[in-house]
Length: 255
Image (cartoon, rainbow, N blue to C red):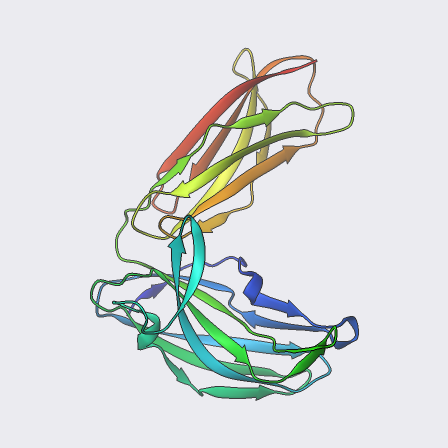
């Protein structure tokens, strides 16, 4: 069996807010990281919570997640050669969730030979029609499952851009992070600020991000503390799940 690893809330699909008087709809877990080999299967339990005032019905659907031009795209099961989503088996295949109720669904997926996608959305696809701004809509949400077949997690970063603090704004840093390897990765970033003598004067954790192969995302951090006038260096380090690191830096002045 594929082994289950840690997951962080990450998808906007993981929670849907309906009209203010109707509450929210959520699914857990939001993300599951898996590692295994071709031909292996895994079964995951998904839980949907209906905190709205309406009974809602869903069909269970799997879609492959691929990256095109650096961004994620959902592809219907079976449209790609080596579709992981096409192997998905749900039990049950549809559910109706009453207000205030939780329901669970099991999904089993198998890694095919030469999988094109390294991510699958196991989706509660809404079938209940809702009114929103005069239109009929449905609410769908799901869990992202990512699959790693090796430890080849690699990332690259663009030059670090630093905006020094001013009387009206905090110090901020920004750059683009890319998944340059063949496997999904989890990048945990840390901003460190050192003075001219190399002494660490401040640090700030960054929001962890998960990237599929080929994906690119913007990374940023702010530091709201006081810095005395002088010259500094900002260093940003990302630690990947295989303990590889990516580091970049840039100098800046505080006046």
